[in-house]
Length: 228
Image (tube, rainbow, N blue to C red):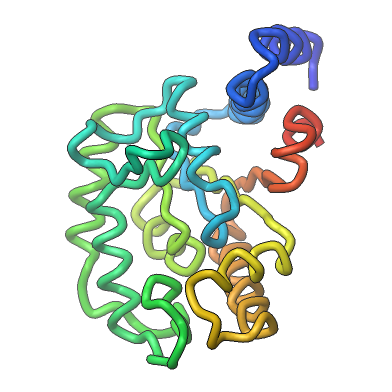
C-alpha cells in the first residue's frame, strides 16, 4: 500500500474503536484496491454467512450504490445483514431452481447440485434490466451468495473492468453455522457445499480482478485482512 493509502487507513482506524471503526478501515482498504482502475461495477460473492453482507454495506458506506431502500432485502434487527437487491436474488433463485437437485435436509437457498454447465433458458433480459438501472448510479455494488455459482452469467453482461470481491470463511466454521438450518445434513456435506461454492466462484471470476476478504481476519484484524 502506498503512503497515501496507509495514511487513509490510519485515519479510518482511529475514527472509533467500535466494530464500525474496524469496518470503515476494511472499506478504505478495498477502495484503495479499486483506485487506479476504471472499475465501477463490483460483485460481492462467497458462501452464505461469510460476511458478504458486512463487506457490501461497507462499500455502500464509502459511496458505492446498492439500490434504494425499497429494492433491498434488509434485516431490521441487524443493520449489517443482507444488503441484497431483491431483483438480483429473485433472478438468481429462479436460475438455481431450474437445475437444482432436490436433496432431503438441504435448504433450498443453497442451490444444492447446481452447475453452471446447465444452460440458462431465460434471465438474460432480466439481468440486463438490473444492470442498466445500476449503471445509472455508477459506481455500484451487488451482492448475493448465489453469485458464487452464477457470476459468469452476470459478468458476461458486464465489461472486463468489473471486479469480484470474494469473502472466504473456514469451511468448518461455515459448516457449523449451517447446521442450524438442518441437523439432517452432516458437517462433511456442508463442507462439500463450501467447496462447490468457492471453487465455482474462483472459476467464474478467472477473467476479472478478484479482491479476497478473509472472514476470520475481517473480525480480528480488519486492516491486515485487506492489505494482505
